[in-house]
Amino acid sequence: MDEARRDARLVRAVVRRGSRDAADALVRRHYDEVYRYCARRLHDADGARDLTQDVFIAALRALPRFDARRASFRTWLFHIATNRLTDYWRMRRPPTVPVESVELEDLAAARPVLDETGLLARLDRTLATGDARVAEVVRLRIFGEMGFREIATETGQSEAAVKSQYHRFMQRFRAELERDAVGREEGGTS
Image (cartoon, rainbow, N blue to C red; front, side, top):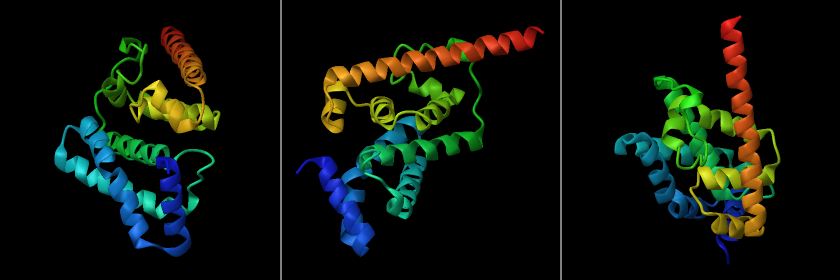
């Protein structure tokens, strides 16, 4: 049984029967990966443990609203983790960096700077308003740090389709950021 199906089976057991064993299995299966994700972004082991706990509490509470047709459990979990991290950084108001100084060739590599600029939150908002299939590809690439082949396997698409969706979205997102930067410049000079 593949990972996504196993997760879906465990989710059903939690939602339908209130199975603590299934909930524990879901947490055990994904805890280390979510913790590493939080720790890399926070650079604070204690804070990452606290945040990881918050992610799983939020996920288990929201489990009845999880829709496996929209995204895999893993993708959904990373979406929750990203939102919790965004909230964490928003509360601390990190210094801002002008959008123009961020290279966007590969957002996965630029994530630390993007976290500080608030662009990851903007990216996530943009993804939420578009095609769910494309959003899953982009989230797995950027937030899940998966390669295109791995994403293709996870989503049941060809590797070429996954690459195409990712690159088309990134071009649109980059153009959107450039339009906003031009709008700020024009607004500032008037």
